[in-house]
Image (tube, rainbow over the protein chains, first blue to last red):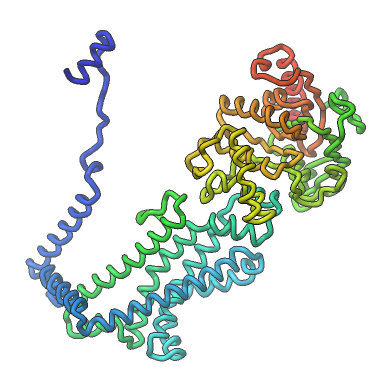
Length: 286
Length: 274
């Protein structure tokens, strides 16, 4: 006896009106299948473009060549080859820059978001600086700090700081009037209000700033290495590109994006731990 | 528009218990917002006696929330005097408990941690830990036993407001100021919460002042209802509610209740047309 028959029997002759909502198969595809499909389509188009011969392999290497280079670079890194030192330099640059940007961005964000003085007097200057093309400062940083890692850290920090300032300041403004009034009725000091209410309330915004910043440090570090004769991964890309080894460039970029993704995911993970109450702390929405 | 029928003498008569001790005394309270040219409160006089329940009712924007903020010491009056227990109100005070339309529980704190927050702010973390037992008693009173370590996200609207009541009571205030505390709840829950509120206020002999825009709510809970007219906000009528205590929801169907509601409604309509 099927479920439908039972329903019929129980309702004494009334026809069952159980019906299935029509959801198209396109919306029911599991995530991993959808992602795999996109990946396969991308590779097929890439391969087909390569096979037509319309685009020179110097401009667009084949997926196979790129895979080979991925293996080569990966092998080199894992066996302690010559690429390990550049990787370490870039990682150090990104790490220092991210820590610096977080510290400076958070401090300035609190200054701008919490004090009327900061909002009135400091914020306009920050906005003005933020509108400048920051990459244009690279030669200045090199002149001031030399060709070492310092100038790259400075550029990456410079790029990543602003979203963190904005995120922190926006977070401090996120608390609603009720929460402010409640803290006032409890006789809370300004510092208590900041520590126990405004900062925790603003955490999701702060982390949004951190996510944007985490992407910015990578861009800043590589740009710095391009323009300032760095010895990091950016330099490997520059050399490979000079040698018209486009497949190598592709492979190096893919490794960089893996590192970028790892930093990004570390921020997301930290956010999930510390902002456990906020539902939208996933990769997809910030 | 004619206002002759409305008589509010400067010497307002005190509610039911004549011998009761005045707790809150407001005299000639005015509030101007100079920048916007608004006269929000016009010469408000008010005396709340110990253990009484009073409500102020009026259309939105009539200044009733401003009045509550002045009473709570959140904003200063432009003129007049606010005295609580014989001492001037010049800022937030520990003996005032406040509640708003939103529960405003903080999602990163458990229910218990939310409730002891006022203690933590005033006396530090150690004092807050010592208040845990008192907070548990309050939770039991509010029917929230077992929810101590739950985060507010998991509470329903009514439960969240009950937790907010506990937070208001944890510092043992003698006066409760309520700003439309249950207006965001559905009607069934609101009726139930109002009865709970009555029970709590009676048990603690708390002096309570409620801001609301629900006539029924004001009548069923209060000893006195003050009707407020807007621009400038002033009391146009003081309605003594002589329904017996404790009040029950069944009373809302009695003719006496209906007559009181009608009387307040006609006052409000007059104010709205003016």
